[in-house]
Image (cartoon, rainbow, N blue to C red; front, top):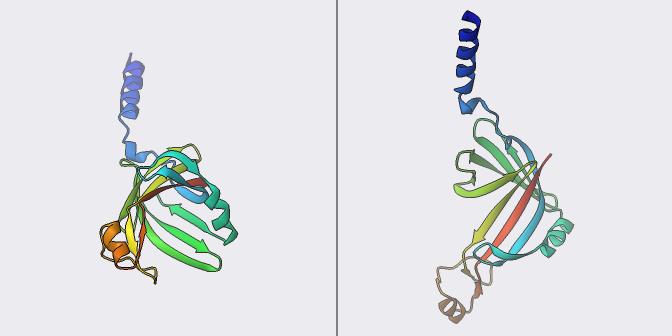
Length: 158
Protein backbone atom coordinates (compact mmCIF):
# COMPACT_ATOMS: atom_id res chain seq x y z
CA UNK A 1 0.00 0.00 0.00
CA UNK A 2 2.80 2.43 0.90
CA UNK A 3 4.50 1.65 -2.42
CA UNK A 4 1.28 2.44 -4.30
CA UNK A 5 0.93 5.79 -2.54
CA UNK A 6 4.58 6.61 -3.25
CA UNK A 7 4.18 5.63 -6.91
CA UNK A 8 1.00 7.70 -7.30
CA UNK A 9 2.68 10.70 -5.63
CA UNK A 10 5.70 10.39 -7.94
CA UNK A 11 3.48 10.18 -11.01
CA UNK A 12 1.51 13.24 -9.87
CA UNK A 13 4.71 15.28 -9.50
CA UNK A 14 5.96 14.17 -12.91
CA UNK A 15 2.63 15.07 -14.54
CA UNK A 16 2.85 18.58 -13.07
CA UNK A 17 6.39 19.12 -14.32
CA UNK A 18 7.08 22.66 -15.54
CA UNK A 19 6.79 23.01 -19.32
CA UNK A 20 9.81 25.37 -19.27
CA UNK A 21 11.99 22.34 -18.52
CA UNK A 22 11.16 21.02 -21.98
CA UNK A 23 13.73 21.97 -24.59
CA UNK A 24 12.20 23.64 -27.62
CA UNK A 25 12.82 21.91 -30.95
CA UNK A 26 13.62 25.39 -32.31
CA UNK A 27 16.92 25.50 -30.40
CA UNK A 28 19.87 24.91 -32.71
CA UNK A 29 21.37 26.12 -35.98
CA UNK A 30 19.18 26.70 -39.02
CA UNK A 31 20.01 27.51 -42.63
CA UNK A 32 17.75 28.98 -45.30
CA UNK A 33 16.81 26.22 -47.72
CA UNK A 34 14.19 27.91 -49.89
CA UNK A 35 12.83 31.36 -50.65
CA UNK A 36 9.67 32.16 -52.55
CA UNK A 37 7.17 34.85 -53.35
CA UNK A 38 3.41 34.53 -52.93
CA UNK A 39 1.15 35.54 -55.82
CA UNK A 40 -0.73 37.88 -53.47
CA UNK A 41 0.52 40.51 -51.01
CA UNK A 42 -1.66 39.00 -48.24
CA UNK A 43 0.60 35.89 -48.20
CA UNK A 44 -1.78 33.71 -50.19
CA UNK A 45 -1.93 32.15 -53.62
CA UNK A 46 0.62 30.26 -55.68
CA UNK A 47 4.29 30.39 -54.73
CA UNK A 48 7.05 31.36 -57.14
CA UNK A 49 10.48 30.01 -56.20
CA UNK A 50 12.36 31.17 -59.33
CA UNK A 51 14.18 33.94 -57.45
CA UNK A 52 15.77 31.39 -55.10
CA UNK A 53 18.17 30.06 -57.74
CA UNK A 54 19.06 33.62 -58.73
CA UNK A 55 20.02 34.77 -55.21
CA UNK A 56 21.94 31.54 -54.57
CA UNK A 57 24.12 32.34 -57.59
CA UNK A 58 25.29 35.44 -55.69
CA UNK A 59 26.13 33.46 -52.55
CA UNK A 60 23.00 34.45 -50.63
CA UNK A 61 22.69 32.58 -47.32
CA UNK A 62 20.93 33.11 -44.03
CA UNK A 63 21.97 31.22 -40.91
CA UNK A 64 20.03 31.47 -37.67
CA UNK A 65 21.33 30.28 -34.30
CA UNK A 66 18.60 29.87 -31.67
CA UNK A 67 19.73 29.65 -28.03
CA UNK A 68 17.81 28.22 -25.10
CA UNK A 69 17.72 31.58 -23.28
CA UNK A 70 15.39 33.17 -25.86
CA UNK A 71 18.16 34.88 -27.83
CA UNK A 72 20.18 34.11 -30.92
CA UNK A 73 21.81 35.55 -34.02
CA UNK A 74 20.92 35.83 -37.66
CA UNK A 75 23.76 36.01 -40.17
CA UNK A 76 23.04 37.11 -43.74
CA UNK A 77 25.74 36.42 -46.32
CA UNK A 78 25.79 37.80 -49.86
CA UNK A 79 28.98 36.85 -51.67
CA UNK A 80 31.88 37.74 -49.38
CA UNK A 81 29.90 40.16 -47.22
CA UNK A 82 28.31 39.09 -43.94
CA UNK A 83 26.01 40.96 -41.64
CA UNK A 84 25.00 39.68 -38.22
CA UNK A 85 22.01 40.78 -36.15
CA UNK A 86 20.82 39.74 -32.70
CA UNK A 87 17.42 38.12 -32.37
CA UNK A 88 14.98 37.04 -29.73
CA UNK A 89 12.38 34.34 -29.95
CA UNK A 90 9.27 33.32 -28.05
CA UNK A 91 8.07 29.72 -28.32
CA UNK A 92 4.67 30.55 -26.77
CA UNK A 93 3.97 33.12 -29.54
CA UNK A 94 5.83 31.23 -32.30
CA UNK A 95 7.73 34.44 -33.06
CA UNK A 96 11.29 35.32 -34.02
CA UNK A 97 12.20 39.00 -33.65
CA UNK A 98 15.18 40.55 -35.43
CA UNK A 99 15.97 44.16 -34.54
CA UNK A 100 12.44 44.68 -33.20
CA UNK A 101 10.69 43.23 -36.28
CA UNK A 102 8.76 40.15 -35.14
CA UNK A 103 7.60 37.47 -37.56
CA UNK A 104 5.58 34.32 -36.86
CA UNK A 105 7.17 30.98 -37.67
CA UNK A 106 5.55 27.62 -38.40
CA UNK A 107 7.66 24.70 -37.18
CA UNK A 108 7.34 21.35 -38.96
CA UNK A 109 9.89 18.76 -37.81
CA UNK A 110 13.37 19.80 -38.91
CA UNK A 111 12.19 22.87 -40.83
CA UNK A 112 10.25 26.04 -40.22
CA UNK A 113 8.77 28.70 -42.46
CA UNK A 114 8.33 32.43 -42.03
CA UNK A 115 5.96 34.57 -44.09
CA UNK A 116 7.35 38.07 -44.57
CA UNK A 117 4.85 40.67 -45.80
CA UNK A 118 6.26 43.90 -47.26
CA UNK A 119 4.05 46.99 -47.50
CA UNK A 120 3.99 49.03 -50.70
CA UNK A 121 6.45 51.93 -50.72
CA UNK A 122 7.94 54.68 -52.86
CA UNK A 123 11.60 54.58 -53.87
CA UNK A 124 13.74 57.33 -55.40
CA UNK A 125 16.45 56.89 -58.06
CA UNK A 126 19.06 56.22 -55.35
CA UNK A 127 17.04 53.32 -53.96
CA UNK A 128 16.00 55.22 -50.83
CA UNK A 129 12.46 55.05 -49.51
CA UNK A 130 10.58 58.35 -49.73
CA UNK A 131 7.67 59.69 -47.66
CA UNK A 132 5.13 59.42 -50.52
CA UNK A 133 2.26 57.22 -49.37
CA UNK A 134 0.38 56.67 -52.63
CA UNK A 135 1.33 55.49 -56.08
CA UNK A 136 0.08 58.69 -57.72
CA UNK A 137 2.12 61.07 -55.52
CA UNK A 138 5.16 58.81 -55.76
CA UNK A 139 5.14 58.63 -59.55
CA UNK A 140 4.23 62.34 -59.89
CA UNK A 141 7.50 63.08 -58.05
CA UNK A 142 9.42 60.97 -60.58
CA UNK A 143 9.94 58.05 -58.21
CA UNK A 144 9.13 54.34 -58.46
CA UNK A 145 6.19 52.76 -56.64
CA UNK A 146 6.94 49.26 -55.33
CA UNK A 147 3.79 47.19 -54.82
CA UNK A 148 3.14 45.29 -51.59
CA UNK A 149 4.49 41.72 -51.61
CA UNK A 150 4.82 38.70 -49.36
CA UNK A 151 7.68 36.24 -49.39
CA UNK A 152 8.16 32.93 -47.61
CA UNK A 153 11.45 31.65 -46.22
CA UNK A 154 12.06 28.01 -45.32
CA UNK A 155 14.82 27.13 -42.86
CA UNK A 156 16.22 23.63 -42.28
CA UNK A 157 18.00 22.48 -39.13
CA UNK A 158 21.71 21.81 -39.60
